[in-house]
Length: 172
Image 1 (spheres, rainbow, N blue to C red):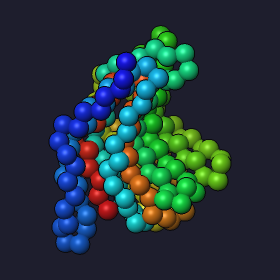
Image 2 (tube, rainbow, N blue to C red):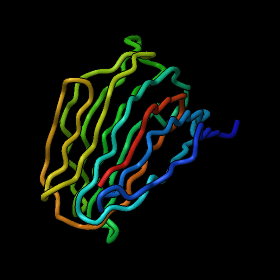
Image 3 (cartoon, rainbow, N blue to C red):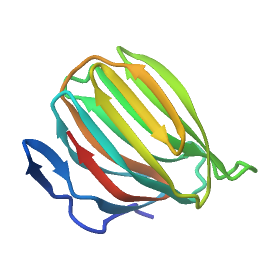
Image 4 (spheres, one colour):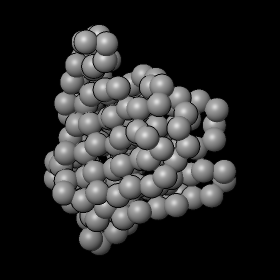
């Protein structure tokens, strides 16, 4: 089964007072077992924020891959990636997904817990890069880490399940 990413509305970027603002859009990501889908939201110079609501409505079974939904910034030079992840396994008895901030820098990974997220529960999220830091917020939980200041690309993605991103916007 091939994964399908439905873009409910196209993403439009408009300039307001010299600051790039994105109009909020909805994305429904349906990725079959072992498949993934991603949408590039845009590029940011040194500061950016991805925000919206996220909900995982189903997890697919796969021997190797877990269900995943999240937002990320990746440095244009490949030196770092910062991701807000919700990740879980359909084999789990708990029907919960682990939420975390994951930072990969110079081949080293750091993870910071953002708690759990239940199947079908919708929560607000944001991932912000600014002033040499990345901040991830999921619901009322927040995690922060240091990152180098660098231009980056913003994306949202899912794998091995059905994830809905609502009112997603990228601002600079």
